[in-house]
Image 1 (cartoon, rainbow, N blue to C red):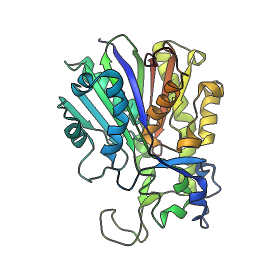
Image 2: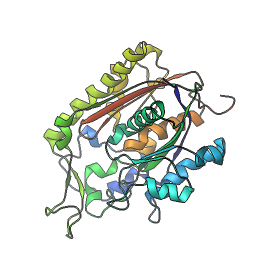
Image 3: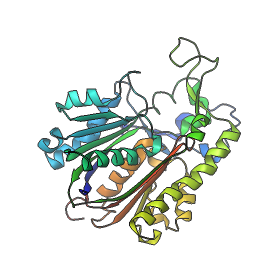
Image 4: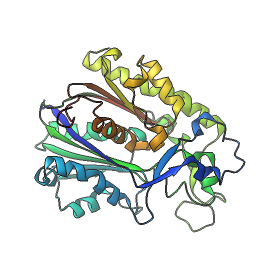
Length: 340
């Protein structure tokens, strides 16, 4: 089958850099505040009040256009997007993004599931389309835009959960080539856990109904314990499955890039895979939990800093929501800037 390569990656963080003291001033008595899952990062970035998901997507894509030329990007065959908080309930980001960019891909897919592991899932979907049809290029975009919108609501910002998320977007280009091959991918669905993450409003109502309550994530101590146990297991599990698939051991991983939900997960994952901290980039204290955008944004930060030389073996691994999905993928890196 044709080899598919990730030839370039880019990220975007909104200008509004918010420190932990912003949330500290609103903190109320929250019995979950001491839970390790909600220990706040030092900083995170929030979407601007006049910014939307498509704006963020365009800003993430801009460096790809600059480095690879407008012609390559404007002629992509596949556009796949994942948006944490769609601006219009019925519509995803793909159609409007294509309109703004003036492109007409054969495939426009707004991927709603996959959560924090959606970047790997989108790569898998794009590769499958490219290997079974005529498409030869794909643009993948992940947007996390809920931190500065849902989690800063007047009642929600006092909850411990609100200090953890940050906003950002990431994008990558995939092409049929041998330049930076996607070596292996593993995606797993666990539908039995799909109901363990819920949206909550007090007083109860459907999210689209008029009312006084403000939407937030419904956490309980028992659910948090279950999510923590699953997350600890799933991320190393799918990464090891990819290692087995491509015939390597974990000590051959040069860079492990995961979703960035909290410090304890990050430590446990690298310990489980027996990797030193310097091989597992940590953007949590600058970006917070970027959900689905964490992997591409972290890759972009590390790549621009020159810490992922071409030829490196990069492993991406993440789990989503309450553990209903997990995905991992290995790439032989070839997107480093010139001279790195």
